[in-house]
Structure formats: C-alpha cells, structure tokens
Length: 117
Image (cartoon, rainbow, N blue to C red):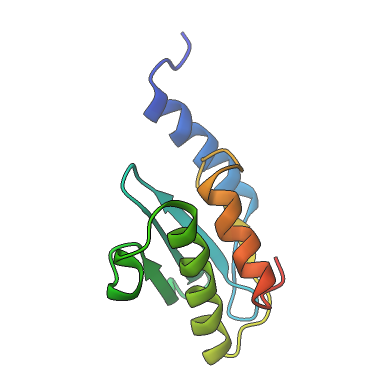
C-alpha cells in the first residue's frame, strides 16, 4: 500500500533526509520549516540537542516584508546570528520540502552572507 497524502509523503522524505544529515557544534544543521504564511529556520546541534540560532517569519524585522524578500532577509538574519555564535559552516536540511522557491532562496541567502553549506 502506498502513502497517498501530501503530508505523509513529505514526512517520508523528511525522515529519509534526516537519516543522512546530522549537525554538530562546528557544523550545525539548518532545519527549515515552511508554511503557507512564511518560513522558519534554525541551527541545530544534534549531538547535544540544542538550538544555536533561529529565525521566524513573524519577527518584527520580517513581518513588513513579503514573499521572497522576507525569506532572503530571514536567511541574512540567520547568517548574522550564526556568525555571532562563531559558526561559518552548516549542513542544509530542507525538511522534506522541494529545493525550490522559498527553500532555495533561504539557502542562497545563507551562502551570500558567508555561511558555507
């Protein structure tokens, strides 16, 4: 029997990616969550189970922006917060979402602002 609903298919992709991708203190995992209204991302140290930095679409600096502008600014903010923690490299976990649209814009914004993915 095949998995039929959209959320179940995304969950299977997410689990498959997470089986291969793991972050540590020197190279944390960038975990992405995308909703219909916005995008959130966080840097996670999987070895200790801690979130090192995070950014959410509903923050005051991002609320006025829309679409890809909001996502690009969120990526820049996350990169800035990562650099404050002394993080220069990370692994990208797309969370089962396709790598296009806002997910891609976020990854490119991180790269443009000095985080090696």
